[in-house]
Image (cartoon, rainbow over all chains, first blue to last red; front, side, top):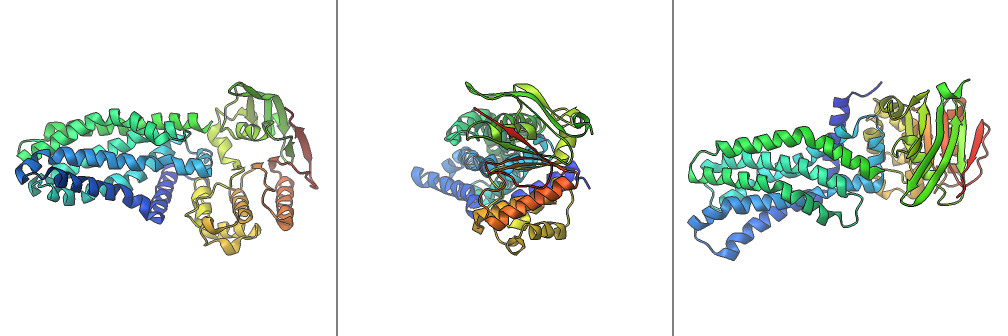
Length: 226
Length: 209
């Protein structure tokens, strides 16, 4: 009995999730980084709450992007190192499906986790509760887009020994629009104005990368597999 | 039997690795019920040939056909019929032996857990089914990777040094599995340094630098 694309997709997502939960330190690393960085800013600047509120969206977004980036290095590397990536490549399902499943699973355990702890950080930075909905939505869209962009970078750099430095160099410039519009959306929500424009832009970027990045990342992987 | 339409044919394959011309026009044919034993000194491109035949590596020149059709244009059909065991056992250290089989065999065909346990039993590692691959010895990992090949129920086996890390009983087991596979009409391409003493149709391909 053959396995349909969807079944293979969910089986792979399941495998990735199980592997992540078997390695809790890998799972917690970006979250702890996120919490530490955002805690250090108010300590280092000793600002008043009103000033803190002004810089909060920027701090939150920079920290979220950097911590999501930290975990991207693991995306394909461990599978490439132990040879399971070759097995996946020969599983009869295209590399695009494999990349999509792995990236989605990666976002669920890192990006979504960052989104879920962001209210704690938001409270610490003085972001009003009324702005939380916009903050959560913009972070969810931003981290998902970053995971897709990161998949391309990770696919290109698995063969390299110091690949993580190059990965940051490839991904961070591409992620600048996310930072600009994500921070703008959160800032507007904090100041009580409409954040719809920035959110639409983030959503457009997310749809754009969701549709095209799997193909680009699969092409990158194919090159590195050879 | 016509090999060109029924089996696997490698036709004048050339592969360069940087400046090195690793495979220089290698040709080979394997029909159903046949085993091709690829041997040769280190660095002569045995593994490269296996990767070309698996479709992981595209040759600069030449082609590989399966049942008369290019493995590039008919990739899905070919991969469904293929079981590839690289030199590394390709197991996730954090998953148990059974989970490793479930997630890799499960991508190819629906396989109930009892089938996977049976495969592990045939390769003599049923007792390790629920142990993480991390704690298994090199030989046990090799046996688990052989169990994966069995469980895939594929007709084409591509094995890279299947005898590595195995004890005498393990070597006999591999020979037995290969003979049974070939006798059942399967075909196999085996890269091995040692001589294969098999009671089946074995052809040899010696690669030289």
